[in-house]
Image (cartoon, rainbow over the protein chains, first blue to last red):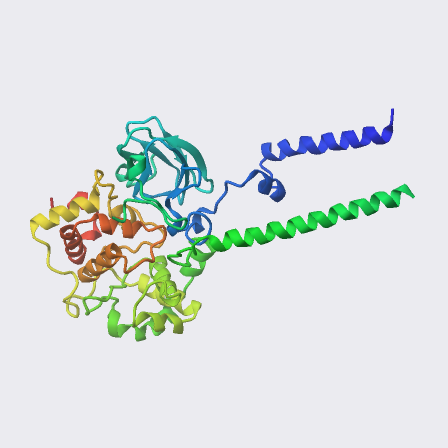
Length: 174
Length: 253
């Protein structure tokens, strides 16, 4: 047996075992975080930098025809208050919370997305039919929880406005 | 020796790697420059350090400094000018954030921006802790502006409904769940003793997008959802001092 080869093999095996161990014990390794893509944000400074600054919220059109929706849930509002998405395309929803735990549900669908402070929840949704959906918070979040509702407008694909790369679609402003 | 040859070859690879890294960095810079600049509503973030800095003031020193504020904000923190806010018994964090926003020009005001620039961080914390310690009701002999007239019953009903329950259908949360007396959010002013004209003025400025310093835009959203009539009703409600008690217990129906 070649001892040098065995030693190299054992060391490699040890390092490879350490990677899942860091995940299990929730040890923060910056290099690994960088490699697998971080879903962590600071809930207190969402408005200062990163993808949740206020002019980046709403619907973004991707190159392949799908859309990305960024949203903040906070006591007791979803921001933006009215979302606009095209029907029948994949909707990549990225939502985080600025304070408590919220849960975003769309009336008439089975979708429920948790919004947690410090973490970005990433899901892919699809709304095949055009129409208006009520979005409701289904996780008790405080004194005004029951009034935490907003709206989702699904429009046919050809009616969805063509957005410039720096523009975000959202029907609350109109 | 073959070893040297191998080393030379690896040097060549390293060089290619460095070139690739430089190219990647350049493309990253290009991608980053394509992104629209972030619109930042306020430089304040409610970290524990910020909260500690904002609430560790000396009220006595603040009282001496606040002599300069008397002219507009009133000797007891109750303003005699309708468009100027009452400061008495307001939350420290709310006042502190507004002064920081004036300083950073995130909230526009012709008199307040230069005043905020002239204050040191310690001055701000001191003045704020003085105003927060003032009594909730002014001396009625000196002050005839607050509390104002009670709104007529129709309007009072609209306002008390919004303050207590909000409007679930339109997604308007109840005012009292952030502005007191039921619950307070960090940086949200208590509106219990605020003067009505100021409340109306600010609601209209939030709705029209003139004032944009609310973090994660709660007030811009809510104010634009309210109708004109509701904004007036809320202003009269708070101007009459009815926000002191939870509306469901003693407010008008």
